[in-house]
Image (cartoon, rainbow, N blue to C red; front, side):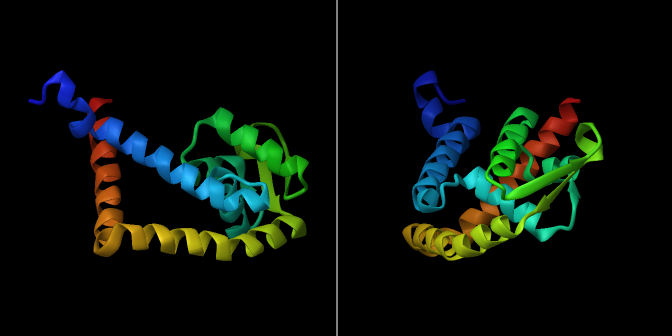
Length: 149
């Protein structure tokens, strides 16, 4: 067992949160010309891939806190990048991308690709291994979460 002073190096929760914040900052800097952050860019991409998706379906796919999801959806809607229609609640409300949203996400793909490539290059030969380890970490954490329920 690691001592309290070693927790920074050994804690999966701490290390994954630090890595996630660093990656988020790196992508946010790259996406600044689009006036989007990475959460909004991913959200816009998810909406763009489906036709008239429910808020619940999008929430499940992006796996974010409901308040953060609604805040980002509202910002995207106010900018005219998505349209939210339908009834109340997550299941009744529908999200569709607008032409402006499609244009923006399309123009952002090269920026995202460059950021991905630069990060992969910085990782050297371990980019694929790192991606696989992230998937493994997610699956292990989900299994642990489900076992605790």
